[in-house]
Amino acid sequence: MLKNKDSSAIVAVADLQRARAFYEDVLELELTQENEQVLEFRTGTTSLIVYLSDFAGTNKANAVVWGVGTEIEAITARLAEKGVSFEQYEGMDYANGIHRDGEYAMVWFKDPDGNILHLNNM
Image (cartoon, rainbow, N blue to C red; front, side, top):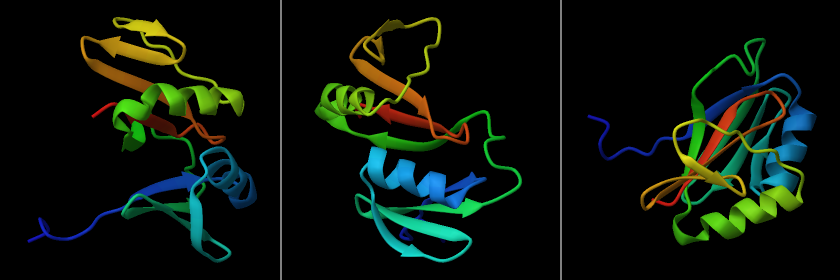
């Protein structure tokens, strides 16, 4: 039924202008559509929808995941230069914002509303 259909990530935020600055300026996503309630950004071949909600930042799990492959170190360093703080979780090696478990590398950080964003080298 849905296996050949595209999907997109959707993130709730409390302030669209603050979210726009983060997703457009910090993450360098391209804004493709906007209205008073919703922003849509291009990310790879899909989109990320950001919308106003009273429930912004209440999700305690990953909201968006990007597989960035071998660019994980460079992207993490660029995010750090832009002032992004990284989450640190126990149980894995951690250095320079990147968790490692064998060959697997992972980065977690939050948007201004506390939505958890994730990068991995897959």
